[in-house]
Image (cartoon, rainbow, N blue to C red; front, side, top):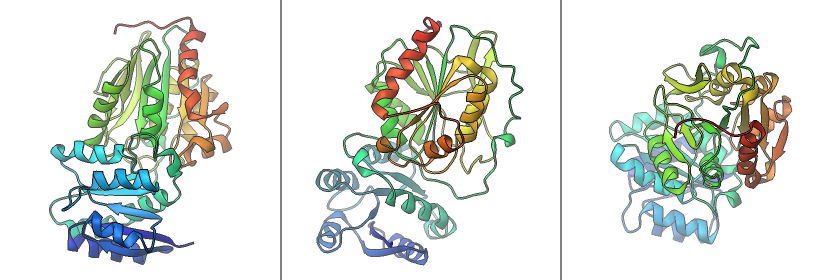
Length: 367
């Protein structure tokens, strides 16, 4: 089945290059490429696209307003293709919060060559968007990251497998969450439902650099718990969620009975940095049975192997169920490998996190 794509960008160069790249990919057809949302609305009266590739800043109507209009009228997968600057990161985050599925970053300079050299990233984003369950996107705000089609290394590239000697059971609990496409919507639903007293949480959400800080800050304003972009040596504390920075791997470490995170450079693992497998493996080594691992909506298989290692180390493991996922890829692979103890709807995950602390008899730490 052909994926029909509508490109909306005020740059003629971007429209031409994107159309050429997408039309060259098997199973994708650009039906229209227009300069602003008002023209897009006219074209959509005749052919409604399967996926919209959308810029943010455009004349006559900005991309955020257009996106909100689309998600209210007829939810449709949208890929944001926007220039990444620190100043513009919040604008793009707002667009993603309105219900976009994925982001593809583009520079201000040498745009044509960039798009051509990153064609596989764009095609992967469009295909992931086409398979997304947009009914899960419309009601809530969020963002998602784009799969990066590059060499696929495993967590071995960052640290060796666990030796089976994790710490004995303590009252210090750790919850490790991994997610990708559709994950920011899912994370918002989970984290905003948590009470201030809950286990310490470490999160990998596939997301580019500069976006994780804005994403964490937004969740922090919405949640009772503290949510922040992780920095090296940050403590994992009850009532705090640490989100791995885009472009860096995050590992759990332990000093005595206290947990902290290490934020490091490294190769792409499972085509991602940060990688869920890297985080989960480190949790299996440092926390063992003191941990709860949760794998949520996302394309691909990152996290499946690491979650299995967590389960083998004695951790409890959960997967988001198919019905509540935007893309049932990562949880499906984890279930197939035997890594998931139970699959739950998204709305039940926060309660399980609270139960993790109750099972341990309460959490400790300085908040």
